[in-house]
Image (cartoon, rainbow, N blue to C red):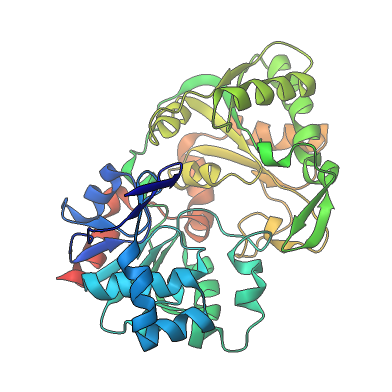
Length: 391
């Protein structure tokens, strides 16, 4: 066994364990057990312990179909084809639903079920539905297929079916479905979900698949305008403000916190970023009366559980996927969302959230949230459907 880099190793004399269920990529053990109710499964690609089995690379050159896949597609698909062929599982599952390599496998292994679980909000910009390898092909459904894709909602499901030969079932976000609906909160508390990404620093322009989308100044225009207005509103109305950070390590946390200090001139706010477990952020967010976000998946997840979430969307020219609820079509602005950032609009949105009683809020958003993200408590729909795939 040779270690290449990080957690990737070349395995010489071992073969992977056979199972009827294979996960294409790593999903936390607790979630896997919730989904299948068993510990009898294995991974093809596990970023915590990625083993590359040399035997399957060598076998490519002794298998005509694998050679054909290698030259017409790529090495990863060829390797994975032989891996799955050896294991011969009943079902292969991924939560990296925007990985096109996964959707190339079904046509080569028709006797095996392939299921994808939507793992995050999908967009056109730098995401699945802007990928030219998918959307610019007239024969995309001949190339990309799966038995089932579990989606956040039926509207996004229509887009998957437009380009991929598949069926879809709406389940919401499978991680969010593990958490309880909790409308007990600290009164007069506001949480803002940070949009910080270290990879965006020191860049002049934002690109998607090689094409310029906007300047970075324009990309972060909403956050830069919103935070000073939001902090002033909270100060004037005696609301506590907490920034929920998105940095992934201690060095990034320092940078992120400093950036918010530059945006928010007063000191009447707190910074939180203590995610030791994937459920921690959900538990923390439950404590707040109002959640403020721009385009966070977490915002949609909390919204699905009737939390008072308000949205201040980006306004990028010719980019509809920045609209609230995309790909569902809604008015340009509503009682709890807008793409115009000024004192009057921010006050209008926050006043509505604060002054609306919980039962009135639930009634006002119920129809809309079903088009955004459903909430399937304990993943009942997902578990039953996957069970039918491998039983």
